[in-house]
Amino acid sequence: MSFEFDIYKTPPGQKEIDSVREQARQEYDAVWKRMKPFVVGAAVALALLLVFQFTIMIPYIADPGANRTILAIVGIFIPYMAFLVFVISNNARHRFIENPRKAAKATIDGLEPASDAELAELAELLSEGDEYRDIAAYKARVDVLGRRMVKGELDAIERWLDKREAEQKAAARAARIEARKKARAAAAGQTVS
Image (tube, rainbow, N blue to C red; front, side, top):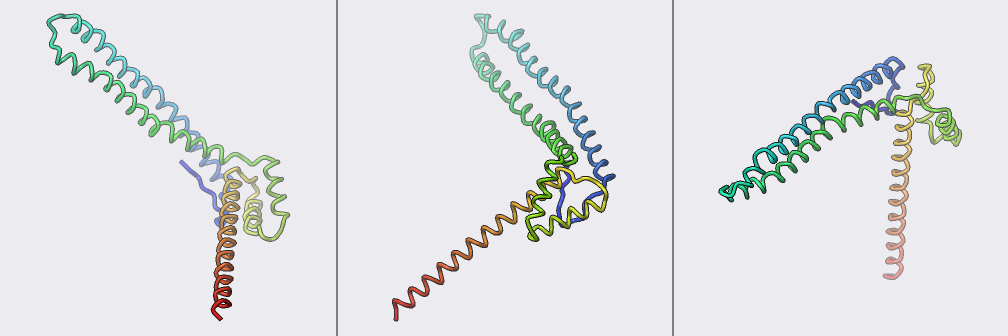
């Protein structure tokens, strides 16, 4: 579950934020409920391998007339099988438990109200000038809704600032390259004449 904010779109209302937060909490709780059976299943699989080793393989190895080919095959097979159980269970745990848990936690954290210090930092940024009018317009739309900004909205503002800074750097770099081309063309024109 994810909830993305965009400063160019209409901000969500408090009811929508509360609804999404509750869904994320339910998802988070459901993921933790899946953890116990998963861990028990992986432990049972490894325990079965150990039981097989102790009850079948060790007595078979102790028998002097045991087929050495079977011993070699099973002796090589058991460690690889244990490794395979570990890899499959670890990948499944990440896919079905860790990734959804992290996404739900990020959504819950992003929908927490912004602190006074964060809002003061935003107010200071907005007081710097007219270049942040898009952010000011978004903040005004949130204020009209009568709710406090949430951390996810501050993250969206931060992404907007990062994107803007990258665009400004790219434009400045393009201008420098263009200026160098013009200087080279002028220098080449002077040497030719």
